[in-house]
Structure formats: C-alpha cells, structure tokens
Length: 442
Image (cartoon, rainbow, N blue to C red):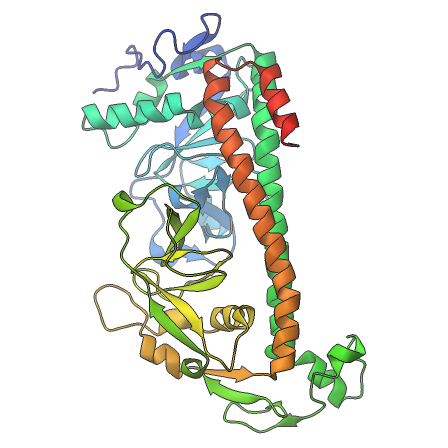
C-alpha cells in the first residue's frame, strides 16, 4: 500500500456513524487548518545514542512510555537541552495528541502540562497538533483513535497487508469521522470525566504508596524513633507506640541496629515459591488477577494463591516486587512469597523486599533471572513482633484504600470502554450517557 495522498483509507464504513457526521481525511483537516500539523518522531542518523541520555532534562517519549492513555514521565529517558535542540523533528508540547504508529500501534495520549518547553518523540510516535478554532476537538480526536472503530481498522490493515507501521503518508490518508464541535466537546467531557477520576485515583495511590514507603524507611531503615529516644527527643509518636521502640543501639554484622532487634537472612523470613504456567490463551475470564515478572498481565477465574500477597519477578524482569491485594495467580516467570512464622507481616516483607536490590542477584543465564538462593542470603533487620503488628495495621489501612481506589478505577474504566464505542458511533446520545454516569456517581 503506497503513500498516495489522493487515496482515502476509510477507517469507518458507511452506516457505522450517523449520516450527519463529517468525514474528512487527515490531509483535508490539515488543509482546512483544523490540524496545525501532523509529524512523526525522530529517526535517522541524528537519533540519540545510548550514552547521550541523561538523568534529567528534556523527556524522550517512546511507545512504552504511554500506558492507559497517559504519558508516563517517570519511566522515560532524558536528553540534556543542548542535545535535544540538535534534533530535527518530534518536538511535542502540552495538548498534542499522540498516536503510536509502529511496534504496538494504536496507543494514544494527550501530552500533559509539562515543566519543560517540549518533550521529544521517538520514531514510534506521531503527534497531532489540533487548532483551537478548527472543526475538531483534540480530546475527541484522542477518543476517536481509542475507539473500537479505529482500533479494529488497525487490526484489519495489519491482517490484510504487510503494513507494520502507519507511515506519515498513510496517516494523512486516514478518514476521520466527527459530529459538530458542540457534540464532540460533550462526548469528550463525559469520557474525560471518567478518565480524570481514574487519573485522580492513580495520583492518590502514588501518594499513599509514598506514605507507606516513608513509614518503613523511617522506622526500619533510618531508625528515626530509636535515634530520637537515644537523644532524649520526643519521637513524635503516641506513647504506646513509642514504647515499642528501643532507646539504644547495639552492634551487629550490619553495624549499629536498635537494641534487641535481630539480623536475619531473607531465607529465614520467607520462601520464594514458584509460580505456575498459565498461557494467555488458556486463561478464562474472571476477577482473579494474573501476575508475571513485571506486574499484572491479565485475569483468570481461578486462584493459585490466597491473597493478599507478594509477587517477585523471576525471569525477564528479575526482582520486581508487586503487591497483590486479593487472591491471585502467579505465573511461572515469577515467585510468590510465603512468610515464615517469625515474620508474619506481609507488608513488612513487601517493603523489605522493595528495599533490597534483588535485580542484581541474577542467575547465570541468557535470560535475566533472579537467583533464589542468593536472595535468601541477603540480610534484613527484624524488629520485635509487637512492632511488626503495629506497622502491619497502619500500612494495611493504606493498602485497603489503595485497593478501593483501584477497584473504583476498574469500574470506571469498564464504563468508559462501554460508552466509548457507543458515543463515537452515535449509537448512544450524549444525554443518555450523562444519565449512565450520574447513576454510578461519575
């Protein structure tokens, strides 16, 4: 299939959207001024080499940095501003609609408010810059790309041709269908309200997770309450809790640790049990999360482990530690944690494992893997049982709130994914969708 700009690639067939909707190609929207420009990411000889990336600077975004319709600025690489300025194209700014056109086609996002003048896109991504006073709304365009109509189109062209990428020429031939600007804004508002609540839950969970990490670090890494008591300072804790902390330090193989606490091997505190093979094609629809080496990978209708629990990456992404809030299934690229009798606090073990550099304990193999025996030899400071119980109760309350937010987000995402194709196709009108959202409190 060539890049002949006169050829129209019909994403939506006749009858799939209301007859009063507009149908224009990307090229026509460019000529009309509704799109300021469409541009793919950087490629060619000027693309940065591995040793040119920095710890901070201008974000360079790949397809892998787009998840759940959001640009993840925490996972991306960076370029120093002077190096970024030498690139030719792919300078994206707040408000641009992004579409992955290579590798995993069809991922979308809108560039959020950013602290830098722009972000850089790699060759997998295309940016669509939408004019404020044009015929199309940027949020509607993003949702159109998300719709089953567009995504099934990508599946069709991949199946019937050798296309593995949507070149810029092909993208300009794509036909976009859209209603009046007023209706676009209404559709985008409904779907955006759901996405905003999902994003709010995600940010809230980040804050809650940071609180739990900070508490673990303060109590069991920095020993802040113990230091305060040794220096005759108020540890800032209720007296019954403060009394659970020693008021002095003792020597150990790790140096000074709170008096009465022990140094244990991880192997004395837990077992890393092997997950079980469960290929994607044999999984059955259900509400049991399936975990692999890098987190959740799907759903099933049968548990392997009674939750809550901890999953640790074994092969592929060794040492990645994930919390499972419910019953779960750990597949054979992962371990799951079985706590020993002397350390029954799963929350303590979770944060302790996160605090170890498990990824460095690799097996001697072509496929990166965690050496379980080496992990067992790692040392860990173990506090008293009553203090473990208190930590577990505090952090469990945080974990329950995180799980509630995740469950709400899952419900909202299901509603959004149900409404999206019906709104984009015109099957469901805006007022009907608004009533549905009101019933679920969105």
